[in-house]
Length: 208
Image (cartoon, helix red, strand yellow):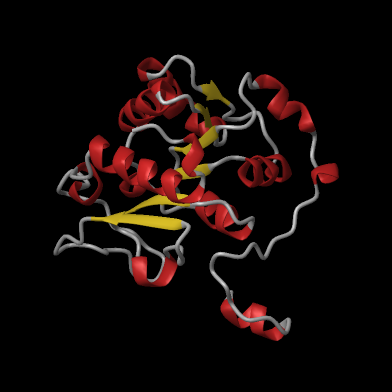
């Protein structure tokens, strides 16, 4: 991506959006579903392989704590992420489930509007970076040095276990250790990382 930016004649600034997205290009119906359109946090529980999933239950517990601080949480993803979204809503019933209800252009628009995205190593993480939205990303099997977001607007949580990263040439082997690299990441760690990032990026909205 940095090479692409250099070809365009610009320096690579990880905190500056490089994907411009016009509101006119998206249907604004998505935000009509939200009661609080200003203090919104997006959660993407999905991943290309199970070894990159943290679990809907964990995301739901984080969402519940954020909701108590006045934030509205929305769950993004495809129809295949419905089960995880359901588990999130068991823990936080007020979370808005948008899985399977948004086109890619709508997802990009949503990510541009929210305060931040909480996700594992995923495609939506990269879209959020592209539109300039802060991210809290969870890494384990993926190669952080190669794929993790850079800059002050992004926080990466990685336990750096001896067995990770295990992905090689795009292939992630089936984990025989219960995906310890992600399961060892606690709800408290993710909540605290999110709170600190919110404090840096929109301090007036955070009450710890």
